[in-house]
Amino acid sequence: MPVSTNRIDKIEKSIIYIVLFVFIGLTMFPLIWVFTTSLKPNDESMSFPPKLIPEKVTLENYFFVMTNSTIVKSLYNSLIVSVGSMILNVSICALAGYGLARFEFRAKSILLYVILALFTIPIIVNIIPLYSILANLNMLNSLLSLILTFQILIIPLNVVLLKNYFETIPKEVEESALIDGCSKFGVLRRIIIPLSLPGLAVAAIFSFIFSWNEFVLPIVLANSPDSTLFQVALYQFISIYRIEWGYLSAGIVVALVPVIILIIAFQRQMIKGFTLGSLRG
Image (tube, rainbow, N blue to C red; front, top):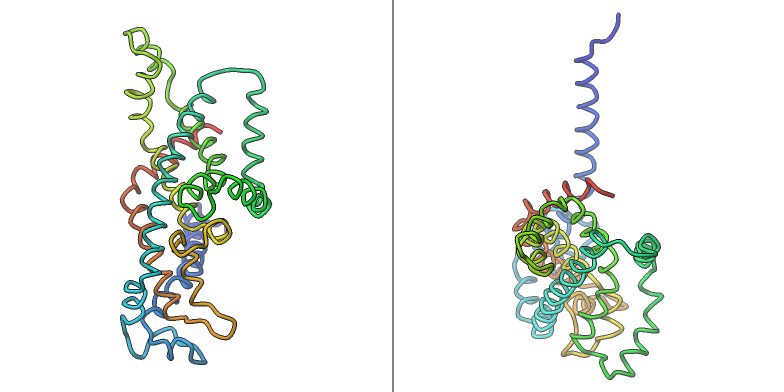
């Protein structure tokens, strides 16, 4: 007896839901474990066998993290560097992406391939050259140097992302504005940028997350107490003989908060940006 189409559709949907449920469970379980560990006393967090649900809930770990002067200073540094890197990156990538989307010139396709290739180079390869350059410029242990060097991580991705987004905006809109007497810069400022806010929001969030989560560059280029970033400061809870799991977990939860707030605040723009930006590739 042939299986009805409706039954096949139900089976396919059930399989999809099961796969999604398993994927979400595997993704969320480590985060749930970190959160529950942050609510345990340090002795309980290091007990064996480990328990998911804390026997005694405490906010002592958060209190310690948020009152530790080194941690608070590093959190402040990370916010400065991440926001500064985001603003600089979006400004550069918006201009570069617009130029690649609207202007034709020789070796344009080659330039795009080079930009994409730069994104595949491991950052560890650039550590020694970057250290030498910054040392010669007397810019080690500087928040400004981190803002500048973080662009290596993000510019290739965001240039291509914004180029694809700008290509979804009809050229006729710009041509009409030019006919009406608007300058090229005026078109970019008054028309293109307002229409591109979803794409710019995605680029800004990518930039912030890459900068906020980066560990390798800060630990090498800025490890003085005044320039330490939050991710590096959390490393003090890891020693050769012991890991302070409660403090470390509380620090990880605190580190997740700015990213979660940013994503929730711009979730509509992100969805629209991903959808429209995927129309061109």
